Amino acid sequence: MKLKKNLLSVLVSATALGAVFSSNAFAAEPIVIKFSHVVADETPKGQGALLFKKMAEEKFPGQVKVEVYSNSSLYGDGKEMEALLLNNVQMLAPSLAKFDKYTPKIQLFDLPFLFDDIEAVQRFEKSDAGKSLLESMKDKGITGLGYWNNDLKQLSANKKLIVPKDARGLKFRVQNSDVLDAQFKQLHAVPRKMAFGEMYQGLQTGVVNGAENPYSNIYSQKINEVQKYITESNHGLLSYMVIVNTKFWDGLPDDVRKGLSEIMETVSDSVNQKSHEFNLADKKRIQEAGTSEIIILTPEQRKEWREAMRPVWKKFEGAIGADLIQAAEASNNK
Image (tube, rainbow, N blue to C red; front, side, top):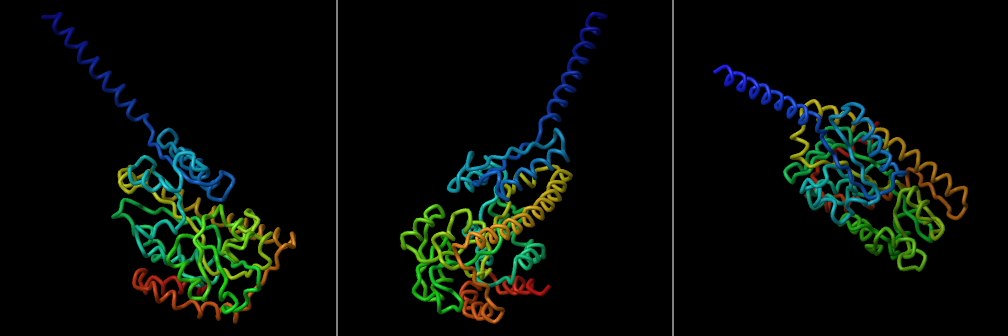
């Protein structure tokens, strides 16, 4: 009997010890967030991803691990959204133009001459209306955490674009966006959908006559070497949304989700500030190169462009929502 009791005691102790080891092993298993993006680490987006990793792992040591995969090393443009929905990757930062199939409301950011400047964009993004768009795809399995802007776009061409009629008949390279297509048709210009990597050659050979890009893209892609004029139109936004798999995000412990949300807000502010400074620096480099003349529109000229483009707003008002457009326009009031 005594032997049986001793044996039972040993078994109970072993079971308890095993449970402790098992519990400790489980507790030590970190939450892994795979953050995939398609650009280099040195870009504002790349730096933002690395800053998020640093801050998240410092706040939750041993509990959260962020794996950053840059330069399409894990998933490229064509596969990353599918990978997120399958939870094969948990975090992405795609261009806003990628989301129209999930919610037409995101087309708001492509509307021409909606925002006066990048500060107005940021005011809208921080507003209730701007934040609502981050939640607009949850039913599709996508939750937005923040906006990372790559600044406003400028028009370029081999002729001066000062008033809207100057664009008539020109062929402009555009992204695959219905709003951007309509934008140039409204000017009686010809939109040509073309991959980003083909733009320089297209402009060089005359397949297209003009384009729209932030200063950082104009300088890095040497667009200023094949375009005589750049009109500082600030007419549209090139931006990204940081997104996560909704089921994964909602399944995180409350304190972790709250902490990561706060970190993302800090990182987004940093990315947006640095990207604007980056664009201003590239504008200066273009001016110093002397290859293109930068044309600054007067307030009256910019108003003329905006009024010429308002029919595009009306065309997409039903899909986007008149209240959302009004909220965005109101962000121009400082």
